[in-house]
Image 1 (cartoon, rainbow, N blue to C red):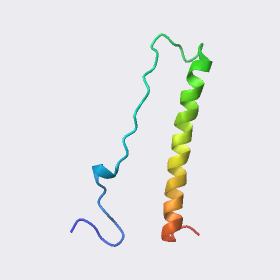
Image 2 (image 1 turned 180 degrees about the horizontal axis):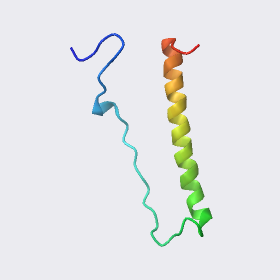
Image 3 (image 1 turned 90 degrees about the horizontal axis):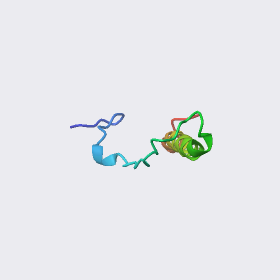
Image 4 (image 1 turned 180 degrees about the vertical axis):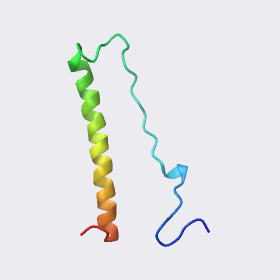
Length: 65
């Protein structure tokens, strides 16, 4: 069997597909700050969402105090 009570094999089908938006190659991250702000905000929001989700899953299982 591929899983135990504590550990379970992760499947590729469980992984969400994240699409990336193409960047304009003529933009400079140091000079065109306003162009890169929305992408950086979106990236940070996705990271926060992932962290929150893992904490929530642990809370559901009773692992967090």
